[in-house]
Picture 1 (cartoon, rainbow, N blue to C red):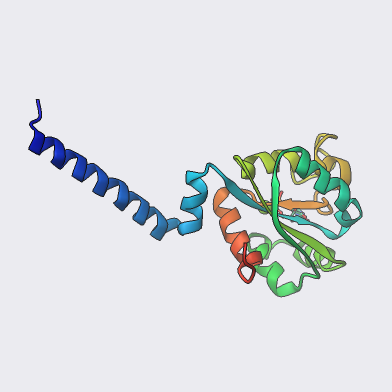
Picture 2 (cartoon, rainbow, N blue to C red):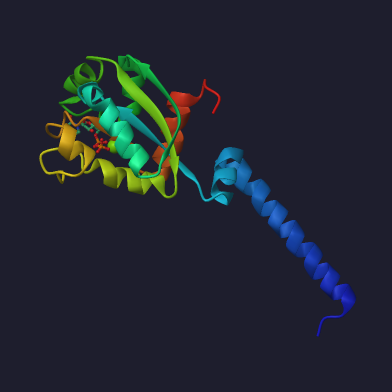
Length: 174
Ligand code: UDP
Ligand code: MG
């Protein structure tokens, strides 16, 4: 059995451990990430690509129907510089110049989305990269054409989402 003094010490150490965990979490992930985790909320980045823009209303409706929240969005013509960052993992692929031509061919909509487990759920909603093999109820299945022209982007992982949100929303308050 612990005496009163030991119990107070245990409580004291527990409180310090909790506070340290929160501070370390904030240092590693940023205060917003830690705050979102405590609320069980998650964010992801979506881009309605040039070919998807004619279906923007339907895509927003699908996002709404999933129970996701649009925290911020804007329309923009992307340039090659930002695409070299955004698609850095594809820069050496032979199709990269075509990808840049496609993504700069018209305005896109850039959306900051929030919801429970949204990174994974949003990828499910949009379907696989190739619109030809995507199920017909997915957004890529409905509105895309093939593995290049596929209507919509969604962050591939939580880590990717944090980086992409920073890339596209760093200058905006949200
Ligand atoms: N892409 C392409 N050809 C390919 C693979 C990808 O043109 O063979 C394009 C396509 O628009 C895709 C984007 O590059 O959405 C990014 O590719 P990634 O492998 O990251 O797929 P995603 O995460 O978009 O499903
Ligand atoms: Mg990807």
